[in-house]
Image: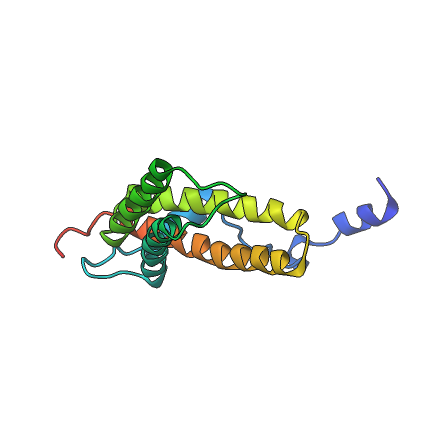
Length: 163
């Protein structure tokens, strides 16, 4: 033990400032859960409105692009794949609008995969437009992902008895 550490240990305990009380992770989680209030029946946070609209817009745009003859990497996509994706997105849009936990969680999983792909694509972006597109997807998708976390918690909170 060095000389300085021995000198510090000789000081009176009352002369040292009191350490800040730190909460454990479980205690912080419990406080956060206690502060959550369930969503009202007609309440739809902005993140839910944006997510539902985005899912519906993706479904419609995907089908519209197919019938407009847009090709992906020089090939026309299969109609079954386009319709299946559109059906999944419309189901997700309806589920999120009606505040179904499974729909919010599923959309958030798709959003997480999109963020990973955009992040990886940013590393190989070949021009400024590709970089801007990746950054916009990362910023917008990251914000939406973060906002949906609290919505998921509020959807899962049981309604208070006596309300």
